[in-house]
Image (cartoon, rainbow, N blue to C red; front, side):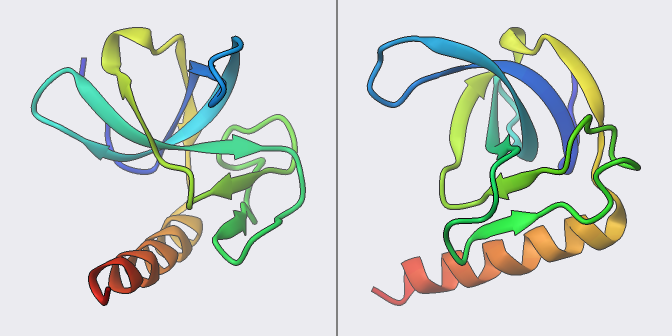
Length: 111
């Protein structure tokens, strides 16, 4: 199964404290040549950090609610865990995501 950056998927996400899991929408950031994807979680909560980005065209993207992508919380998941494809970010929203990711990686690489 192949996936493209900017696709929105529904996947089971394990809580960071290991206490459980929940089905969550995520955005594909990178699809490796192996069995994994690097994704960023989506939430219906308002942005809390400078790297939380509101999805402007959430309806056009296939999301059921106004959503925020949490770009400072990327996770790696197995492609086999994908429950379903929900949609895809619009080009304008994907450009905004890439801009924040460039800033994040520039900050990481500057240390």
